[in-house]
Length: 336
Image (tube, rainbow, N blue to C red; front, side):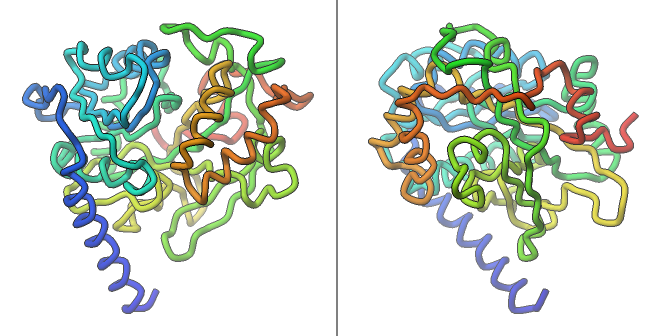
């Protein structure tokens, strides 16, 4: 890495932080309960739109893991999302009508809130359809993981985004508020993944799974990225660059082992593919607020009319984190 490239990355990080600071004006506080945040609390950050049906289980899931406070941005929902969040005593919520795309797909808003409220805290940054799974999550709270990471002088924790789907047509089972989405979208691809290293940012780039297999079968190299770094011991100097796929300083992207062995890692169970998917895909295609001209949603649009079955003979039914470790999709590393 040349000194010129290092300088450019430092300059890029500074620009991202300045940009996030400017975008703060787009956020209107609806309920700001951040005064309740205590030292050592684990915080969760997310941007969302029209997710009222998912929120009851989403909040319960992360509360049960040990999240103490939720800092959420509502991007002009037209359902009951904002009303529901405003009534939750461990939630601070901001509203904005600004364009999702022009905010770097919500990351300007996230970088601002993380800088103001996340400094010195372990912070989870996820989407409302993502459920964080880590080693021993069935027996140990999230604080056990963050305590071990602190003791190991590790500042960031990587995951793979694992697309979950039902067996049969997507609209065969109705998802109701409060339901565990994995009870319906219980299946995943155990293989079919491509990994490559980003030499500039030092992160792994992962693609594959059912979206590459079904929606991007003709162009699997254009399938969405599945690598994420959702859990970080935040510092006000940090910034997410491309969603939570990578960040600066780039040393935070080294969430995999380079010299043999394995680092501890987790999985985000991605529960996008429920009966709500068709409506969501059509709405997002109309709004055109997603990456690369909503290319991902253009691919979905060609398939949703057929109400596809993403299940195949190689699909595995989800059991627990140990199953994912056996399959090589996550690792407990040297955390015993």
